[in-house]
Length: 607
Image (tube, rainbow, N blue to C red; front, side, top):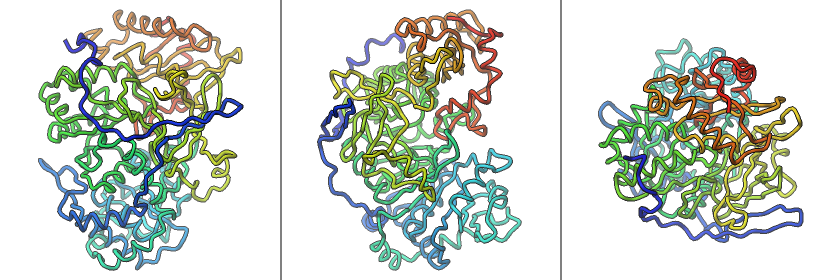
């Protein structure tokens, strides 16, 4: 019944007040376009720590950050969080951390982690939170050692016992380790309670007034999908500029001042910026102990049954599992959609059929649509610098927020994207060469992405993501292939069949696809998990045919497909913390599957 629901776009949308943003376009003689918001960025508080301090004074008993504690939730109020942050700051100031050294955090999201992040900023010591995968899934700690050499930590926060081996394995001889589980370490460490338990409300409260919002506050590491991770400098001005511009554009759509549930790691820009947004606007963050993986998504569903949210965001793999769960559980549907107004996704990832499937579920449950809002940004831009700040049913990356400009340079039938915004980084820590290379002659940050308009005659309909420049490659005849665009097209043409796909064909005569099946879709077609079942094979051929009907050229036509029988591996860097696929790494590690695809081995499906 849900699949047969009439056109969901006819249903009314939950009322949302967007900001008054507007669009201005400058066209240069070479075809380059400069897209900017007509509305200027409004004056805002740039000192994040002053904002936090003042909120702790005005709403000391409101919950700030909470984590699952058995059957309930425990964490920190704004008053408690500020007290712990001042304690961290005072401890760091007493240690007199040398200039050029940083704090390294080996921890998942937690109230203590949040207190360290804000305490370090209050002390003026840059802090860097590292992906837990570097500590927990690695055996040689190669990437973690590289990060240590890069940011030169004077203090390492290894909150729980599971991080003890990694911390001791990579800690510089003069670094101090702080942990809530000192018994797990062979060397002497500082007990976490010692650092968190001695607030200096007056002294640090006064010190906050002297902070320079443009000074380095955090080093946020890139995913390293195109090479070694880079340490992106984040300042308080960047963080607050990103929050202020997003809030101005989105009005009440995101409800960052309300109640949130989120799993995204604070070592990644999406998760860390949400914590900033919530803190700047006085909201409450419940840390989701689940993940969008088959073995941990049940925890997310448990939390969603308890906490009705107005705003929700995850990665495409999470949305696919959420759709499966919502279809199977009427009680979950009722709670989840009871207050929901907006769901957010990164514009590069969500297949249109998945977008439509979730909307139909909402309409079937409440009679109303919610808004699926897309955003676009990077670690270097401090999170999103464009959103769909209007009602839209198209999957895209939106248009610039106030204070941001997109420079679109014609390239291979689309546009290369470059950006300016209040939230753009001043550069990479200790890497002048990369810093110089990432900015163009006009001071725009090179995103290494491609984009195009949904309709070039109506630019106000927004842009869509057209792939990473790094994903482009050549066929044997020298023709360029835009792999990202083809990926999105095939996912649209094959709704519910694939979790993700990788386009292949470099140096070949025709294009092929390696695909991860969607388990639920395969079960519906085959009655089990048989990707070789005739119904599944026919569905694949139909999807390829739909794609090829609109993409007939050699650089666009997909000629063959093979399923992968193992999921993307996080430890091998095939997939990032946020769930996006590292195409180049997949192709390198799965060369045998690529060979099977082109040799016509077992399971290869021809278009």
